[in-house]
Image (cartoon, rainbow, N blue to C red; front, side, top):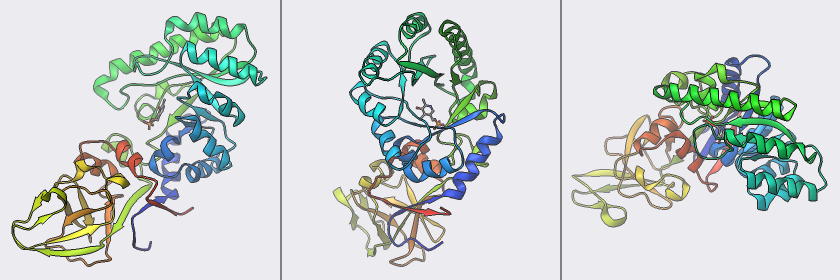
Length: 369
Ligand SMILES: *Cc1c(COP(=O)(O)O)cnc(C)c1O
């Protein structure tokens, strides 16, 4: 592949296919797969990723917000789209774009039924979300009776699925808690379906749940981070390929003397004759200030160059003393080695945060489209 000549997020669709097939290999043949493509498909490119997965016959998509779902419809996505966290103000738009809401509280359920009847809908597909321990969004077990009673009184909506979300599926020290969540979801689903009189689809697991709790795959799984190449554990990461590589270029090299300083607030002071490189990527591109002051590093000609001084809005400076490199050379921020998870650790965070932080200003380029 050609060397980067500017800051670019390179997205390899063959890696996406590999990850998709790895996840699929963990499932029974008839288990459906929902691809979570919220937040620009975890910072990559939602339209391209969703179109690619649609061609691979993915069963479902999920986004967080209505505007993300609308963007997918406008990009030609016909596959069902679950909106995980819709706000009632957007319910008309949601219906007009055939998006399917997660209904997680009595207020949201009532408002959705009201809007859907104004829109003259019948049997509009909805998904009922239960809280089984994350305490973020969802109805509780005690709401089953009132929801099913309400649903019997209307034909405006039809429950397509029941779901819940695991709080610690990646943490095997929390196995007991997770098993409790799985059991409580199964009980809720059983009681709900019995009262409802028909059987909606059931789904519970995210990527780590898919890997660690096969007994909880149910009718469908919800894969996010795994599709993008991370498994929240090194044994799983081995089987996955990060789809996105963040690359840049050396804009300028400076030779500085002992006592000279680098960057805003003079945060770095040179200990001797040193060589620095300025790279066109900064906190406005997603490299937060926590990576500055020698926490994070970039890779130039296979050697590590620590980020020195404060991260600027549009630039970082790195120490290239002893590294054979020139202005115009390629710089790797993350990709396969280090991957985004390893890079994120240097800033005390996780793969999810660094990859979704790469701003829309950074050009996306595609391999194996
Ligand atoms: C984001 C999200 C997922 C995907 O989780 P991963 O750990 O990225 O696989 C699944 N379900 C819900 C409800 C989510 O919000």
